[in-house]
Image (cartoon, rainbow, N blue to C red; front, side):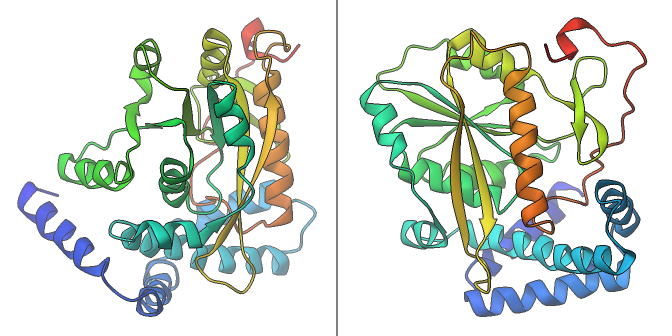
Length: 299
């Protein structure tokens, strides 16, 4: 997409952000038909991911999960467009849960690393964090190749004061002096480099997990929290956050304990609400190496 057409496309997105929520979800339903019913976007990837993750489920059960995921996927798209201009009140209204522990951590000047998976709407989660936490919010992201699209997402994610940092610069960022505690926010369930990943069994499959979180937490002695974002039943576009403490002593826990516990919690959450995860992602495109280094194993 050249620069001219990128600007036209992003202008269209900004215009769509001013739709009412009712019309936005009408657009989502139409987009679901276009992407999945007509074009068949990644339907084979989704089908195989579900089949391998839930071998005990029938084809009929898997089809229901897939259909629910299709609409969830397009809802995320239109919700993200809406959040480009949504007010703070709307953001707080659409994601709720008990985050009072963050005030306690702030009072104790405790730095945090927040892990999450691709459940719920992660763009909403980022905005909610920068609005609701007293901590300085540092959101880790992967820059997009398209400059205009990358700028659009940067503007979205920093609307309420978050600091956006590419993953390859996070160690440098955390070395900077700060006047108040910080919370690093990142999703950690993408497909990782098989030669450096921690390998475990996740959703009945050999799965590699990025080890960067473990390294960051240990190096800077960060309390590790996991946030899950479930969909509120019968309230389209509303989510609930539940926070779990993985460890407040990252330097003392066994090797890859943090990652193994995160994977276990995420798996439980997916089993509870299976359509609420990014099934269209090629999560298992890498195979487990025949030989693993000691740092790739759990002790």
